[in-house]
Image (cartoon, rainbow, N blue to C red; front, top):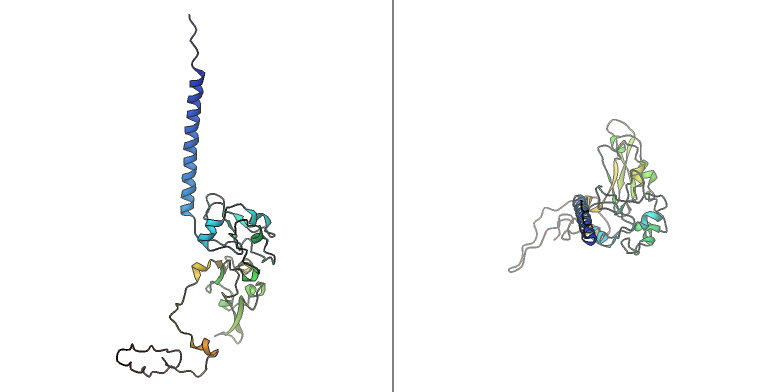
Length: 259
């Protein structure tokens, strides 16, 4: 019986490489689809390291190199893994598990090679990573209990978080209520980490989620004079009628009814 002639080895190698290439392409396509779906589901809001640019600019500038993570002294920065709520590879931190300790030399910013963490930040006190927001329904101080831990632990105590005294209806002792001031709060998260409630009653959130804008058309007469009179009473007198061809003047009810 005659032996079967061997096939063309070059043709066989070509077919094998063609099949391997098709398999790699299919695998790569599935992986890319997964990444795109993960990016589409990702939350656009996250707590970024100090000096982070605005969210859209940060996402464009960050190359996910992890240098900020590597140099973080308290090791609280993380790179988002696949399948999470944030874009893959983006640096972030979660205050409840690890707050920013506000390093004076800001090593994470200095390590950033692209400026996604802006070198314009010179003082860590000027960082605005987020804003502390108090859940008054679960905050112990708002329930009349003595706590004030967030105030005591705040590195900018007396500026970022202050205490106000409020009378109790059922006791002669006053309530000490914490108030957060957005002009000083850095969003470090130390207050959230220290909060003793089962789920923190003070949380750090991105500014875009919690802050509004009052509008440029409002007038602040007391800011011009630098004082607020205690005996102020709005005037009910109507504004002077407009002259022919002129618009009627507006009424400023916060400044004795003067237009």
